[in-house]
Length: 328
Image (cartoon, rainbow, N blue to C red; front, side, top):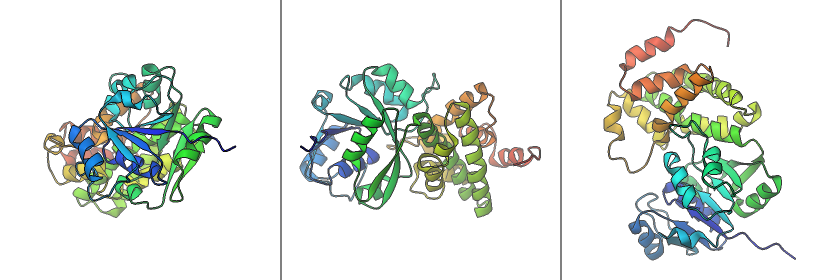
């Protein structure tokens, strides 16, 4: 007898959450999508659209939006797609004991905890998995080919989740390195800001390639210090996601960096944004976590200086280029 399908829910109806709901509903199975904004609930249920966060994408009729967290209690699986700094609050409200797939990328301010560590504190009875990798929401929602990492310490649970979320054009690769998958997703957001700065300042493609490769070295050093495996960081959730977000203005973090490189103030760029550039919040937390672990991350330090308006771009660049010569 065929095993019953997992009833899936998505908590968070931003662009990425909506795209994941669309993917889960692609075969016609019911998906419940929790949204904070009543206007999003109304638009999804009434117009089959989310014009606030994912415009111009017709949504599946099998997606049901709700603003009531209690309505998620009958779900067998919940994908959590809240902003990283709000994940603790959101997870604490989720039904206890339900497997959680964390799709947020960041490090918690004040604790330096990864999202899985935060979730385990907020819902200690819920099994945890992490979904991470090179994904632009609008491409996933349109059904374009995408490969991602699904990391979970429980191999049996990982197989069940993979069977529910996999689609012909949405391919999960399994890993048991939850820490590695999370660190790749968090650090790449900060490095994407640096690459956007290079674009905005007209520093050229050589500079961007150097930032990607040296940034990846920083990601690897930090990841290994936190217990990640090098092969995970070199995979989809690390290098793969880094390449994607460091190469396109479709990345909110890259766009933020581009504005900084053009000479605009960080405070102006971050003001009144409906969507969140997670790297801006992760950067100072990552800097402190790296310092505590005695890991050098000069590119991350430079991004922090620009976000904090601590030094002009020319001075920050001079400081990076003046670092002592060393072996690669």
